[in-house]
Length: 291
Image 1 (cartoon, rainbow, N blue to C red):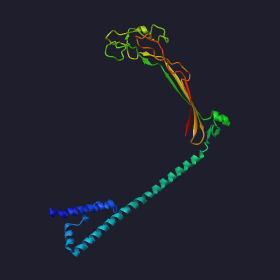
Image 2 (image 1 turned 45 degrees about the horizontal axis):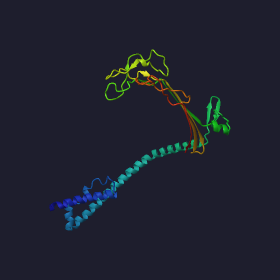
Image 3 (image 1 turned 120 degrees about the vertical axis):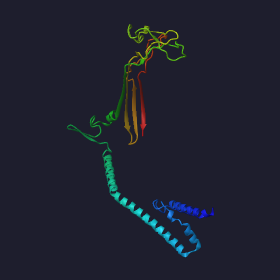
Image 4 (image 1 turned 120 degrees about the horizontal axis):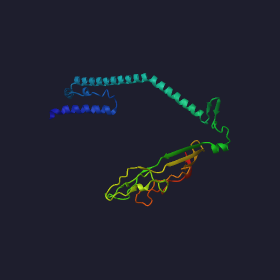
């Protein structure tokens, strides 16, 4: 085991030098990639231990040569980096000039629009300034009342909601669930349609006990649905960053009556009758601070 001690000591010294160079950052990674030749050999250790001056002088010379090699490698790396930087400087300068010109143009455009002035030519007429197209010379009161309004609307039109007739209970005795009625005629003929009789109720009956009805899915259509929602809002500029917004919202603005689907339980006394309607017109106003 004692014969292996010098080898282990040499390996530890190599690792220690490598860690020291990397941690101190005194050389580049390229210079520290191979340190095997920088470690003393077992023969050199024995020669130094014997006190031979010639061997000791050789070790000093080899150490200086290794230092010079490292400095040379560092110099080559630095030259390479400087050449690359010099080569890329023209493109970097050109990119910086273009960026400066673009920013300068944006600043000029921002300054030109600071007072919201604009000029637009339509045919032979030139419109200049805020509100030139409409109310080109409004007084402050008119501008306050009629300017800066925004409007929007949502229109919903449907032909009706599909539905089907239900048996009204667990006729099939399966423990629950939605069960359909028994269709025995044509529900769309043989009657006068009204809110109290939307379909021919005589066309349906309860299924026989412990059976399912033959009613098809969604073979009936409910009343049409027509709804127009409208909103309008106006901004009152107080400062550049602070605005007051007044808004009015109108749901079902024309107050159109939109009936619900008729009662579809074949066992109900109101079977086939429409007994509900959707929401009537609603109006709400709001004042909101935006900053």
